[in-house]
Image 1 (spheres, rainbow, N blue to C red):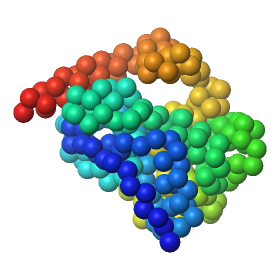
Image 2: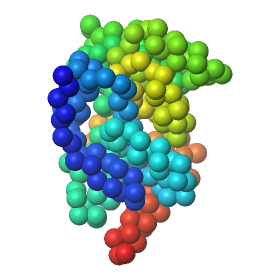
Image 3: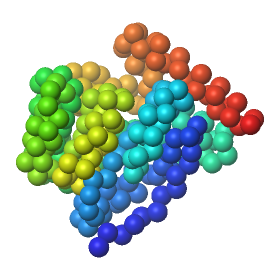
Length: 243
């Protein structure tokens, strides 16, 4: 019998965000794998996609259809404080993925990124966490949803990590939720690029200061248009507070 572990959820511009620690998340996921039924969806809304949701009701509905929405991004934490319900800590997609793998919450399937990246990430994860079972992988280039779902289901994975980029990854999971047999599905964006060694992650000092976005900007200047969404997002939060 599944034990329901209570986690607070707060609305940030109409998008539910879960106030949770890494350990609480692991316990929730592990309990669902061992005792639950159906697919638990874990999304990672950051300021960019929450801002997108203000202009696209379908994206907002999609985000709110998940079971857990991790606060991924310092802007989300700032917004939660401005709205009077400060969230405990920033929970990133990549760190959550690594935490669940380190704890061996269950067998995993890696889905997404460019050809060859998921395989490299699978090799690295099994090397880094002896005993972890990566039971399958596939890149993000596919044409038939049903064949992809069948491949994931045949693997017998407990957890499927999906890195197709937002909002494509969230949309794919919502669309195929009732067909997928793993117990947990989590979106991870470009995490496999970092894990595989294809891209470098920001140094620890950037991570601790919650300014990884600064490193990513210098690494990929083309991200500038995405980064300037943050002040727009915070301005919208301020205006929302005054209503």
